[in-house]
Image 1 (cartoon, rainbow, N blue to C red):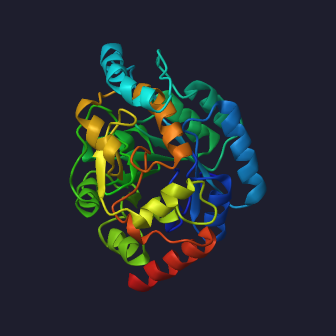
Image 2: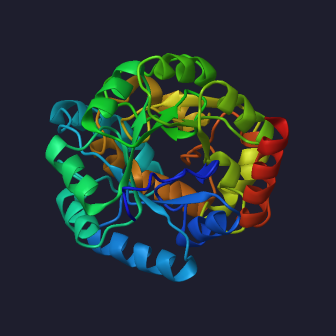
Length: 343
């Protein structure tokens, strides 16, 4: 991509839902519908990411992005160990063994950067923080358009000073992990509209609104609040190309317990459908991502195999009951038409 010509952000982007939600097929389908697909690199090795990029490139001729998880400082081993002991009876009751060690994990950060700099993709976005100045400069030189995820005006200032090309402003309504730059931070509780207004005051960069958006009217409202585009995740979880588990898909519209923000599954604040696991363990869950994520992974996998909605991590935004089935390309085209009509 020639950076002398600024990239025009599509009005709709599909969130890079790591762990299986956003697949190469979903990225391609969103592109087909006129949006921007973002491929998640989180939880993949560099080799796995290379394979996913290859598949995506064979499915679409349109530009797409890759989202990176920025590594954080290691968690307190004692706090993670204490949580492990609390979870042991739960694991034993389901015949699950918990890992005795969940050491520091940088999500193959350095190898992924090497991959993406050697063979650049059009768009690179960051969650859980920002790259170093040298890393951001390297991607700038490689020609990749860079998007920083922010959850506060202070994070937006830092991303702007670093030279990001656009900011994804993630409100509290968003499903899955909140992209706070410090995992111990208490997430900003201002609504997406309020947060967009606050961020707009501190940066001239294009803003991508994210959090609870499910239809064209919501996208149009975000545009009126200062955004240039919108990113949707939960809205795509029931589409044909989603990789979400069938029980998760069904729970999005059948669950009546609402959503809540929890650290119980991963050690980072994340919004999901409230269930018994969250109620039991949220009071004891430490700050500790990704160590807690690795600790609870066997429990979550076993719950998914059982189809046990009381123990699965069911990430969902506040508008989850309006998630629809069907081709993602059709949904994207409809969202674009609705948003343009409502502007």
